[in-house]
Length: 178
Image (tube, rainbow, N blue to C red; front, side):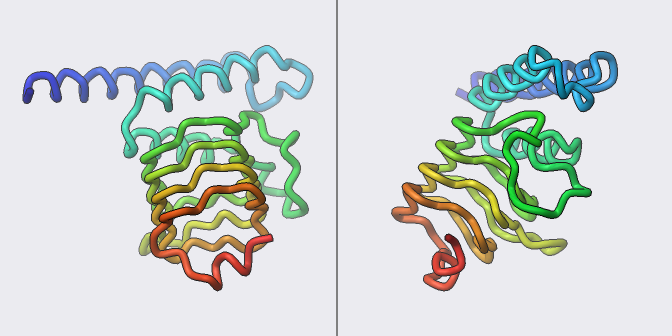
């Protein structure tokens, strides 16, 4: 069992590194960020992203989401502080399997997480900053057994979202969501 766990861990790390290398190539060599009219490159990036997160554990899924966030690929561009515009995202996380993801302290403002599986995820704050789903789209998302400790749900569209058995989620947090 120990050897199996080590092999599985190694395989996940290799999958993560292949994904990051591929994304680096799409960003630097194929101009992923400047592909307003090149839907094919965006589609390749989205398909690769959805495939890799399905195969990774929670910590590595968190690395993928952090990478996508820091590369300005999953939300509206940082200079835009207006309303949520899913078409501005280069890669959509809609329908992604982010179950068990560990996203402590990650800002997900304006990210489309509709129909996303976030069950058993950890979305609580870190010492540096607070996880914010400000104006994120959580419509029909699965948030069962998700840890939402001090997570800001202000302005979040959570229509149809399943928050059953979510932990550390206060009535005040839910009232702040749309």
